[in-house]
Length: 365
Image (cartoon, rainbow, N blue to C red; front, side):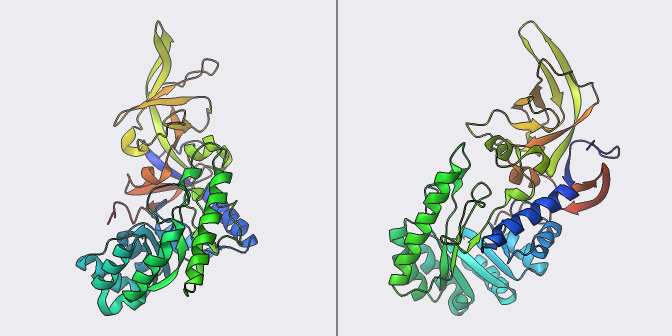
């Protein structure tokens, strides 16, 4: 696909057909294993994409913040999981009460103190909110060890909250070769925590896991649902991990060559694009070979980002793009890139067919 003539760069493009294919493929794969799909909407933050996911069979959405939950609930989403250990204060409690009055809301907790604070803040509305206990399965970010789940669940129950299940985020799967091991650790942690809770008298109806790298590896014996997010678009990290192919990339940033240098002396052969960190984001894990990829030149590497410049080292055997040529850039971390813009251009067959607003952009609380 070429960049449509009416696009002003830099701008995010969504390939409508690739997006739809990615959504259906994940829904069918997850459903075929007897699991439920609860995609993480922090990746796209768009009402139109949420509707496509729900239409393909997703049971609800995952979000990261109250603000994101409010946006999707206002659009009619009836089942929302805020997969974050919220520390609830009075203003947040009022927002959570309003949400729970219009949709099924579940919230992450990873401490007895957090559960007690949430129940106290919600008061007589505590029973409207389901609690999911976050379990650390090896990523070592937030989350309880499985052995700590019972004390947190008891605190939640004492505070009037309903304990529905356990969840984990195998974030260490976002590293070369780690997905199989992370999936095994996810399964073990969820099973151990659920068994301990059930032995203590809690009814565990949900075991929630799965990131984009591990969603296809999660089995029904370990989990009841998975929460991948990046799969709708793909990104340069997933390309480098081998979890998707160039044909699976639905989101790119259209960029223009504003400077070119054919080498000479110690200077590298390179081009400069008008797509810097303010649209690509600045994420680059230690194992990544660049700050993004050029979709139609896989051997090129984005070696540096400034706010409005992307420095691209161009392979010696490939003709250097001309000044003014427009290229498609794949961001390293697509979730960050989407949150940097107000809207995106939706493209089909090289033509802009729609524009979608990033409805939950910037709602970090």
